[in-house]
Image (cartoon, rainbow, N blue to C red):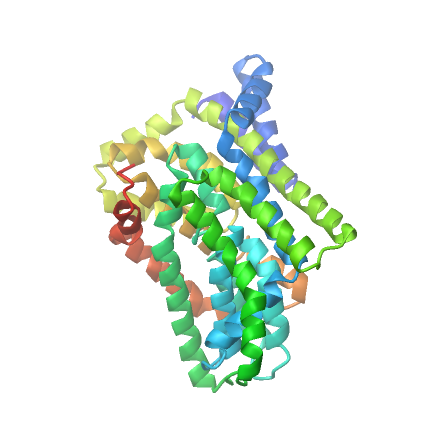
Length: 432
């Protein structure tokens, strides 16, 4: 490793240890690299501006963030919850099953794990904690696990960012997440069923038939969003980036005009929160562009490809190495950092081995979702703890069956790429 690159890593790690926002730390590391290299600091502005303003796909990120926040501010979560209670509430551990189905539906609208946990997840936890059969740890563990569905089932903010750094089709990535997402939901429901049967958890009281039409009507409009989004994308009516704007407008019209659940005060709060969240993501993006410039200039991606070639790793061996790498890094680093800094370093090796980029993208995103539900980083654990006060230790104690299930699914997707690739190939997307 060259001296300038050592300065980059040292400054970035120092910034992280001082609890500086990761985006500022990445920019500081990039500046330290240029100073050590003796290069013009104007390269920072050049790399950041070119990266941010030449990527049309980035426009979708703030739009999906805004759509998710609008839905959480309105009554969308409650409407979907009531609708799903009719579908699966009568199963053993009904409220936990409802949460998983709600997450599947909400995933088709938001593309964000944190939005899922903070919106529908919070509604479900409040309902579960009203009944003594559901412990706080179990309620939190179910919500944390089901929230990982958000970025796997399309649309997906992490997949949009992966498409940015890899040049992969967003539409193909979205399709690649469908089957793994459905498998995740089914396996989670199976885990809940086993636990609920052992603990004799209650079934929900049946909803009177006379209330069904009203509940279905209340839930029909929110349920139309995934149909509009995915139907528009795959019919060619609009691009995935334009779909994000459609999602934001759809959510705003429903919450403000149809449901009348959005006041000017709450709308302003949504705008501020969406701006903050988008600014955090944009700052990390800005830092990643200068870091990627440094890594490329130092030949790090090429060195990684040569190492893989020299080790004569097979595709499966390399993917297992990637899984292990991201599972460890996911304990400490944010999803955006992993996608924007580490994935570009691995892409030359991925292409050298002939690994499909759609398969690799879904695999990486699933790795990162697992990182969101275990300490010490475990962002979803901290979100639920902040919102409900449920101890992280209690959620981890109840959540290990879900974690093992996700690891088993990750291994299956690693060994059998067609779990990811079958649907994109069926829909006519070629190899990437």
